[in-house]
Image (tube, rainbow, N blue to C red; front, side):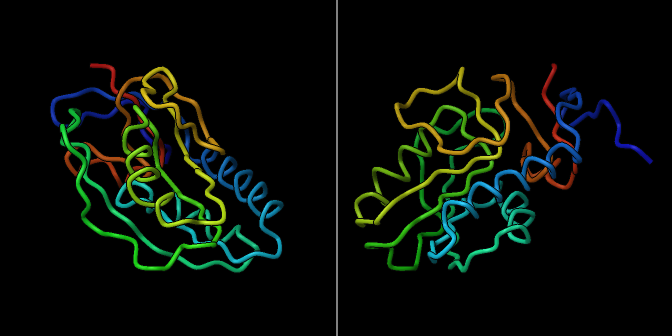
Length: 182
């Protein structure tokens, strides 16, 4: 049974944007790039919860190098509106000084969360290197000079749900990605 072309959440209409099979293919491609770049290193994979958990979980089976994992969580969204201030909900616990860090995001929208993570925490801790990997990027919304290193898909500036991304905790379990149309 195929996934619906249109879904309804919280009074909004969403249309299918990217099918799960295309997401899987792109994740394998991202892993291939990382495998080529980190063949003999042990970077710290740092997924940003909660949205990136699905992307991260499906990326791991493709990773061929040894790694450490350190989850982080920052709040920035409520529904479709962004909160004014970012706040830490789960701080990194591993020492990252002189280590390679791969920050794993579900989506980079305005870039403000990424900027906060890098400038307020990660870069201040003195890592050897930092690579930013995101499944989705909305370059039209970007308000930061910081850009991701590896992007799965470039998407329009509208709100999206599915594949770990949510609207008030709804829609995370959808395999496909859906874009808001109303």
